[in-house]
Image (cartoon, rainbow, N blue to C red):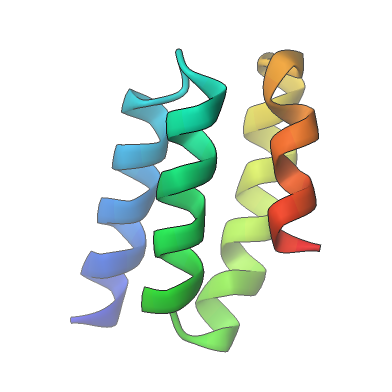
Length: 64
């Protein structure tokens, strides 16, 4: 079940990546919903994902 939440979170973040404010909002929700090891996986995925969308790099300060 937790893996489903992680996959859902990635899906939502991909869909809202057109708007940095919405992206941050969903990222904050993810921080509350995911388990610690899932957050580590999400951080790695976000590094990869934001390399393709540099306008989202400043949004990553939320998870630091």
